Length: 227
Image (cartoon, rainbow, N blue to C red; front, side):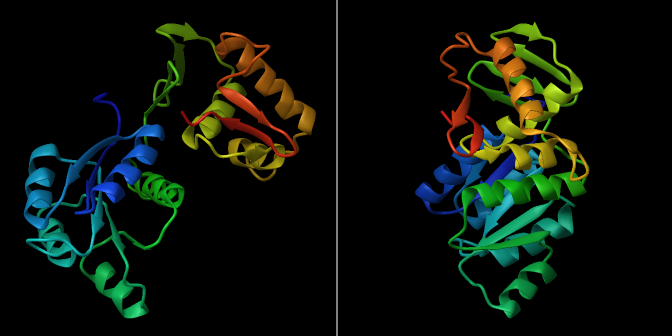
């Protein structure tokens, strides 16, 4: 794992849930560790010092609320609590225990990734590296490498690439891409986004006649290939 990546500890006793969350987090550029019980969570938090913890409420050994209270007494690590309990009282109990955010099951893994990013952003701990398909995007250094070779990027190209690569598999309209990359006040024409995408493909695709990284979604716009 790259030491520059934000590290997320996923605490859940369900293997499939852990693996699903990890898949999306890793594709979004995070380093992921696991714990399957309350005691494991406390030990992992102490030894790994994660940047954020995704914490299930129902855990063997020590439930999520007690884990959250114990962690909060020891550290200010951001905590997103995940639970099937969805009443307002349950939410308030989780927040009172020290959780920074609260997600109810069933949830979209993409929504959880977005919440992880939002909490880390609020805490000043943003994801710094995204690595997919031989492409390494260092958001701190504002640099991109393809198969180890530096690829020069304009600021607009880099911002657009960041948006696409941060949500692999998501189909973006040109309007949504422009708003996310450049802000709601950015008056971009479709052909402007198309030109940026064409430049990104020229720089990153091995075969520009058959794009395999930035795909066209007909009738919608573009997406960064998931896997």
